[in-house]
Length: 201
Image 1 (cartoon, rainbow, N blue to C red):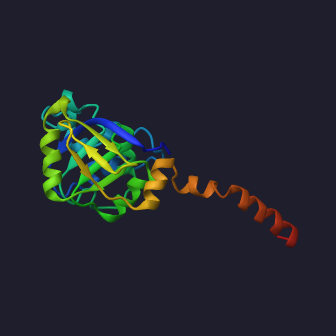
Image 2 (tube, one colour):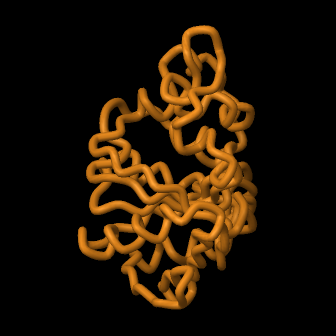
Image 3 (cartoon, one colour):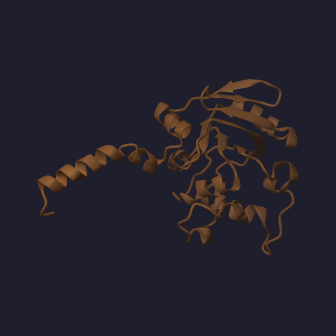
């Protein structure tokens, strides 16, 4: 998993509340078990019309936000079904951080396992960042995980909380497999000992 240390990029405003996982990645794209290739279908039913043409006024189709790395979203982001494809699609598109007043629990957990930092802030601070994000290409925001701060385009700083273990995993690029592999030497030693003690297994 890619490490998350400092992220600087354009923030896209998405003030809709209750954006669910089917809106993030519609069900017809869930056939794959690969984490890559889903970015082109992110928010598919909001980005494209029935003929596959871009919907011009959708935020990620606007020139200023096509390369957005941060989403500033409405309340209860990631609700709905527990599909891990939702953070896969966000990450494949290039979104590494989502900021909202609240997230659905399973989506929130899945973000950390896929290198995305979900940040929970009070409504007043989300409103400030939403206002910053509406500046288009000038909406460059810097998220520093080590210091747990967000710097807006005018230099103002907002602090955020993150659970220490999850922070450690993101900073070091550790997903569940990575955490397990840190114990590889101990696992190998146990298996060798077990094979000696119970060779019939």
